[in-house]
Image 1 (cartoon, rainbow, N blue to C red):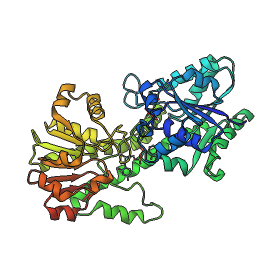
Image 2: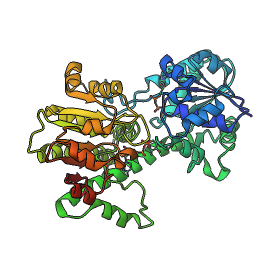
Image 3: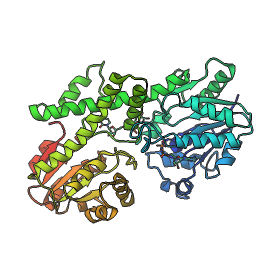
Image 4: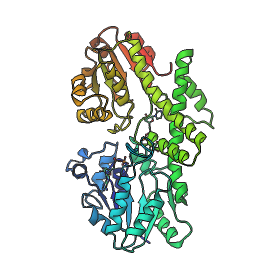
Length: 464
Ligand code: UDX
Ligand code: ADP
């Protein structure tokens, strides 16, 4: 079976970039990305390709190449479903904020709505691909809804988790370590559907890098990969606290252990804590699944990764308060960076949000700058926490357009995101503009201690 028409429901951080690359690499396949968010679709269709709603290095060029040729963005979900042979579901699956599993389980209401819409609209056989990260066995629920509410057409469900990391999405998609496709390996129809998706990726990925498994293995592999990566960050962060007490330097420890080829050097960067839409959500999912099977030790083991991460964010803010003579009340503190990592405008679960919240509880006056995140988003992130009223947030936060303005007359600066431009700042000038003593807290181990201390800064870096 040859796929001619793909529809992707959800034009977010996963759906947008993934479909752009599929369209770029497969000119004979029509790819339509749909979303109920009209503003988002309008931005994807903006004449100036630099205004697309997601910032990713290289993405605007890919969209410019394929958009209007075989890549389309639309709000007409029904039409796109109707015309497609293959439908990707890339909608959001946030952690539940209510009811059973609150704070842990994934909220599958958006997935279920999609399934019901597909069932209602589809008049020909379709392959439905789960792209969103989902709890194990969601494919089964999808199949149930599709088979029981559909128009008698045949649906094949595949799991095809996305492993791209934000900030490097385009290169990750161009050269994936592996593509994972889970499907029904026991039937001819299942095998045919798997092959159809393999053929899409085979436009640019070598066959050896395309893995096929059963659906459950594929679903669980995605959660496991993220849990392992997050665990490495929490492990190095746990030891960063010990380093601060003992005089060891976590950067040196990370280098020394990373040279052991069994451990490897990646994901050993101590930080103020991991953020992003995936790590916390996926681990909470894993914990919830383990608990629901009565596997309490397994659940507790993984939950500790999150507990450590929360501790790291709190600890960083507490260190700031303690260093600033136990009070930040009324003091101007500059936060440089708001995105959860560099080269993205995504702020979901960013450590900066929580550090800002702790500092605001201590009545600090925050001045915030991020190269790609605007004021509206920063305030929305803090409003979402519900710690204080929207008026209070606006009264105590100023968002500025460059790092120098943030630093002016500040008591302290904290680096929250490792944007390259912060490394390149004229730190001598920054120092001159600040109140003295000038404190600098590096939550990302971005800056050189010796250089900054030579300028005159009171410098604190995670893990040293
Ligand atoms: C992650 C996975 O890497 C990706 O495969 C999956 O598809 C989605 O989740 P992402 O969340 O985009 O990707 O970013 P990632 O690079 O994994 O970083 C996650 C967080 O961990 C960031 O806040 C980052 O700053 C932090 N981190 C990462 C560290 O603090 N130290 C490290 O050594 C690595
Ligand atoms: P991710 O990081 O997983 O891509 P995002 O939140 O960035 O998550 O994107 C998910 C997108 O899915 C959002 O733009 C949202 O509007 C869209 N969406 C959610 N439910 C539906 C639906 N039923 N139909 C169409 N789009 C949907």
